[in-house]
Image 1 (spheres, rainbow, N blue to C red):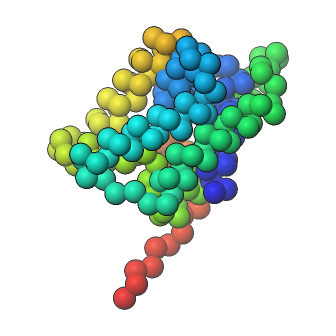
Image 2: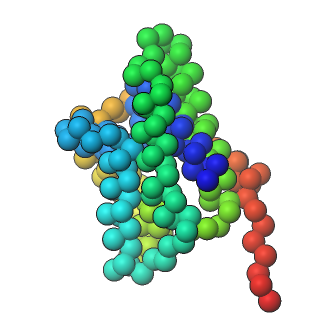
Image 3: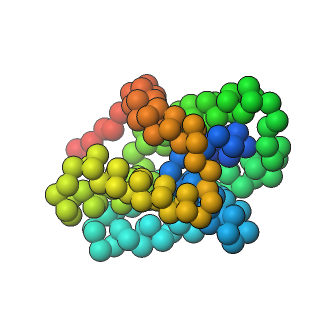
Length: 188
């Protein structure tokens, strides 16, 4: 839960930085802007819809999957309610964006590292890769670029933060995951 909290808080920091969001958050923000539904709530709804896509591709979820869907969105909405709408200073905006990116990576290291089920978007990626025979990197790129394009068309914020997330999140998660994962012990 601590990892999911950090993940949601990191995304909220990126929202108030207003320098660009992660691809899924660009889409969530675009939908939020069009509907008036808070961005975290849109993320919860989207996560539930993505989980429905798991059934035909045979993915299995765990308690961590459900916690991911619900808790991250709640943390984003509460954080945005408590934080200022925007930061005026460009320096503060860049700091918030970079801190947000690092918090998402640390949060990912914690929540992935406990092995209680992948997030809905990760399960979609691995399931589609397995079903289509395409490499995970290719499948993830297609998914991320698709939601980014949809979000941009809906008015979500694309910018330096989007680029930083695209190139920085993988190496950062890998680094934190190696330090925060719990060792899985097989029953036997």
